[in-house]
Each structure stands twice: as C-alpha cells, then as structure tokens.
Length: 79
Image 1 (cartoon, rainbow, N blue to C red):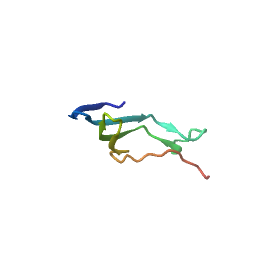
Image 2: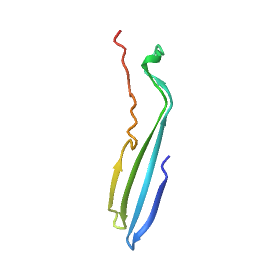
Image 3: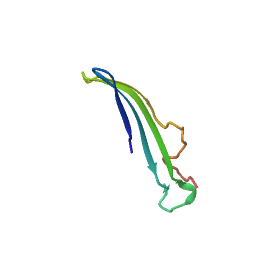
Image 4: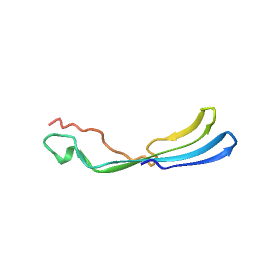
C-alpha cells in the first residue's frame, strides 16, 4: 500500500510525499516448525518526499523502516 500526495509548487514542478506500507504475517524458518525459529507478524513503513520537474528530473529523500522495526529474515538451529 503506497498512498501518495502531490501538489504544484511551481509552473514546472510538483512536490510529493509518499508512505509505503508492507506487512509480513508470522513465518517459521524451519521445516520442523520449531517455534523458536519463527518470526511473528510485523509491519514496515517507508516514507519519501521530493520534487518532480516537467523535464523528468526528480529530487527526493527516502527513509526505509521509518520506525526502526527489528525483525528476523532467517534463523538457524545449530543443535
């Protein structure tokens, strides 16, 4: 989900602000379904602001993982 607001700031430029939302449901990283090797559900928000010119040039600033959400993208059991 990525809502975006845009508005004219000059005759040949538009400003924008956008928020991106990603959701990951709970997941288990191991075929044995060991609950210690899983990750609970989480949401990630990203944001960007910038200016787009009629010439095609775009200047923007982007923040990934806006609220610094910690999550695992994999786990290994060495036992």
